Image (cartoon, rainbow, N blue to C red; front, side, top):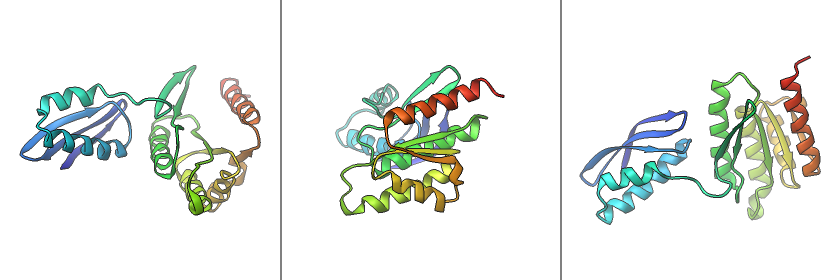
Length: 190
């Protein structure tokens, strides 16, 4: 299965699928290059089960993420990307890629708010550090919460983000307060 002519649009991904004697265009209403890979797996299964391409197109184009997975909210001039359900290194990296896409087409600040990624075993410290390094290149500011997420701070600093743009919070309330203060500062420039 092969995806070509991949386009990231404001509201999803468009690409052409080729394989098993078929070639057709798909639109997935979810952002991120990782969406293409996930869709290819679903399309492969569907074609092996003899599902017609037209049915695949209709079903894929009506897909919606569930839970707290890549929900994008537009509120009062702010764009919020909620992608936190059972977050791991791969999903967090994909979410940061999507944030970077917004960063490239807006004139506002992009703040990554990242918490602990659980169930990583002995890879926890290394993965939190690695994600911090990635966040340094994808966001304008980084806010972290959680014991393991403190490693993201050092990763972001070594990744090139200025320390004054990074903050770790001990409580959800302190983090929420800082986000509200940043929002007020944006609405009421001095």
